[in-house]
Structures are given as structure tokens and as C-alpha cells.
Image (cartoon, rainbow, N blue to C red):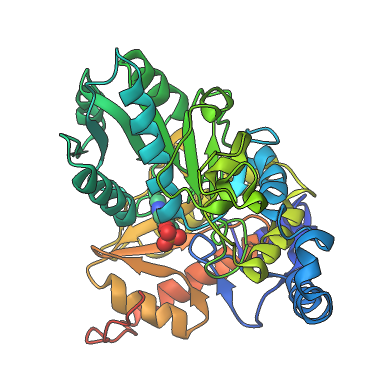
Length: 416
Ligand SMILES: *Cc1c(COP(=O)(O)O)cnc(C)c1O
């Protein structure tokens, strides 16, 4: 039977173990929430200081040119590209995931409406279990557009398949589900969407930096995603938007601010979109926050997504096995697929007292989070999570459950 020293032995031969020193992790914490807010890269402190002291403090307005502030959304997009199977010139790091969804959905609907064969397609199809902001943004857009546009929510994979039909303009899906960690087959769903005449928009919030993604190879049309989760970009750091090269020339979104203009400093009253991915931008970016995204991306340059995937599956397999061994007599239900092919980089267990149990874990230094209904969510981030962390987390979970060391009347915080 596996022991803690076996876990230490796994760490000793882990090819990614050396990357943990790139991050500042507080003592006494097992951090299993990098799927919600990644930890701080050590270099971020130094970088923040340089932006504040030198670039802003000393160089002031000159930094737009001198420090490359103006081109940063595209330069960082190029750095992010290899992590999601994209090429340089295809990604902008900008705005929030919610806003980028609005932009790419609007652009995708417009592309469909401009072709006579797809002009009658008015439906966006997504899952009811998608992350709420994705559903809300699509709802907001379709209601605001009016003109017959509507959102169709489906509950199962079979229903999804059948719902993609001759009325579908866009299929919008989150690649890895935030609650269960279920991962869609991007290629299969995209091919099905295309065969039915629809475009495919993918949200990579729980995929970028977590699982291998091949946007170009899989034929996706548009994608968005977060940098503050597995990419360790910092709280509220700008998100990203990807446009397939074949759609760039036709890509027009209604948030056409001056940063997406072909020549912003000619101050023309007419809008002419920039060529290429720059047209996905809107206005001035939060430079301090944007600059820190690079510190997270630089760590990924030292490894590869296949190596990250191998360790992610080993960590999640180990966590599932240990919980099922040590907590077998407790009412825990695995909500995450066992099958590797459809598993992201998290493990979710439902428990009738999920919220208080998670609060007790956090008090004991094991930080995961809670999602309705009853889901305790544990994110596994191979860059800094060790096999002994998995052991220790399960050890504490078993102790809390065995001793009922949680407060069933625990009050809900605003953020769970
Ligand atoms: C985290 C997450 C978001 C977050 O969107 P914001 O605009 O950054 O608040 C959106 N979609 C999915 C699927 C997410 O997991």
C-alpha cells in the first residue's frame, strides 16, 4: 500500500519538481486552488517593482513606446500561443474572459449573418452547466441584438449533439467544466459543429496551462480564456482571445475602441479595424496587471504541456485513489471523470456538508474551494504541487471527516 514516503519518492524523480522554486508559496499551506487563482511567480514582485518605479515612476508616458506597453497585449499573446496550439499573431491578452466572450460571440454571429447560406442561423448553443458568466454573456448579447437571436441551453452530451442543427450559428463551450472537470473532445465537437454549418467558440479558462490544447489542429474558430488561473498571471489579470487566422479578416466586434483601430494615433473619426489580432482589442489596458502575466508565462517556457499533463494525471489519480481508500466510509461522490481522456486538472467530490468541510480544510492549511451544489473542488497544478502535498491533503481530509471536525452551521463567505 502506498505511503507518504512513496509520495516523497515520486517527488524525487519528478521532472517538474525543480519548477516549484519559481513560485512564492506560503509555509504550511497545501494549495489546491490554482484553478481559481494561481500562486505568485517569484519574478512577479521584481517585475511589479520595475513597472512601478522605472516604467511608470521614472519614464512615465515614454513607456508606451520605450517599455513596449502599447504592444504588450500581442507580445504576450505570442508567448501564450504555444500553450494552446496557436501561432504568433493569433492571440491578444486583453480585457476579461467575459468581455472577450462578448466580442468573439458578436463577431461569430456577424460572420454567419454575412454569408447568405448561414444568414438565417440565429441560435447560440451551450450547456446549462457551463460557467454562469458564459451563459449570461450569451444571454445578454442575444437579448440585446434581438432580431431573432436566441440562446439554447442543453443538459447532456447527447442533447448537445442533437441541438447543433441547421439553426445553430455558434456552439459555445467551455473545454473543461469548472465544476466537474469534465473535458470535451474539442476536435470531435468542432467537426460536428462545422458539419452542421455552425462555428465553434471555446472557453479555455480551465484548460490553458492545465491540459494540452490544439486550437489550430482541432479546427476551432474562436477561443477565450483566463490568465489568472493555471497561468498564474495574478488576481484579475487580463484574459485572452484567439481568432483562427481564416477568420481574422472578417472579425468585427461591437466594442470597437481605439486600440482596435488600424491607426489609433491618426485620431480619425471613422473606425477602420487594425489588420490581424489587434482588432480584438478595445481600449487602454491595465498595464501593471498585464505586465505580470508574463512572469507566469515565462515559467511554462521551461517545460512542455505533455510533461504537465503527465504529472497532472498522476496527481489527480493519486488524489482519487487516496481519498477512496482513506475516506471510503464517508458520503463522498466523485464528480470528476475517472477516464483520463475526459478529465481536466481538477478533482471534485460532492459531500452533503461540502461547504463546512472545505472551510475546515482551509483552516488546516489545505486550500481548495466550494461550488454549488455540494462540490468540494481541488485543483492540481503540476508546476508547484507535489505528490506529498496530495498525501498531506488527504490525511487532513480523512481526519476532518473521521472526527466530524467541521461546523455544519458555517456561514457562507461572499466568495466560496
Ligand atoms: C473563471 C471563468 C470565467 C471568468 O470570467 P471573468 O470575466 O474573468 O470573470 C469565465 N468562464 C469560465 C468558464 C471560467 O471558468
